[in-house]
Length: 281
Image 1 (cartoon, one colour):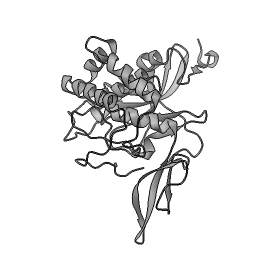
Image 2 (cartoon, rainbow, N blue to C red):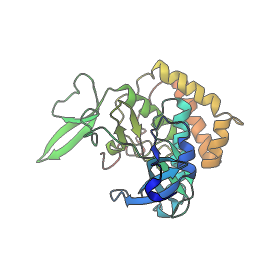
Image 3 (cartoon, rainbow, N blue to C red):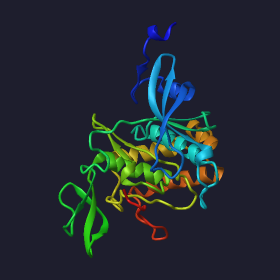
Image 4 (spheres, rainbow, N blue to C red):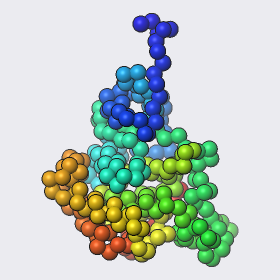
């Protein structure tokens, strides 16, 4: 068919059936690079069988070595975080697959269009001059704002963020920054950048400490109990995790889920690791 007569591809959204097939099998075309990222992050167009989307492609070859994570494993951890997110039923991580691409194997994830002004969205995070957070907000920590002044960093007392804080505790997220929160125009919230997760050591670093020590919601208790069952040896989720992370990391994942189930509370900072990532946003 001549190019002038070609039917334009149909674009997709996170809710579309078959999106994982598009991400896994589609033709990737690199359009640009996200320069702010510490590893190689490529913005791509993807097309498969008349369906198109925008996505992020992070090749393993572009990962910088880390002292506390095995080399060449960040892409798999991103996929593992998506699989756990899907198992919760909360859909907090954009559709993500592991596939070959122009620069070798890597993670491919649907690009999420955020609501206008959502980067550092004041509806989710704020700095206030009060000693205590106002109604509808949770305190994180005091931060220096220049000229010897401090302000209280707070996050919204938002059920979407609370769910994400539970997911982060499960996957042991070492880097939950404000810039990794993507609210969309339809009211959903996604978390991205899950390469430094699933470590066997407690490395939870997050801005979402506002519920530390508080009881889990009834919804979260049910989700954690279900995850505990689905991570049992031989279950499909456990088998999938074993394909993406090490046996020791799978065991540590089960232990974290069991601890959440048994305590019924949000975790608190251990004191053995910086509790808040830097920079925080």
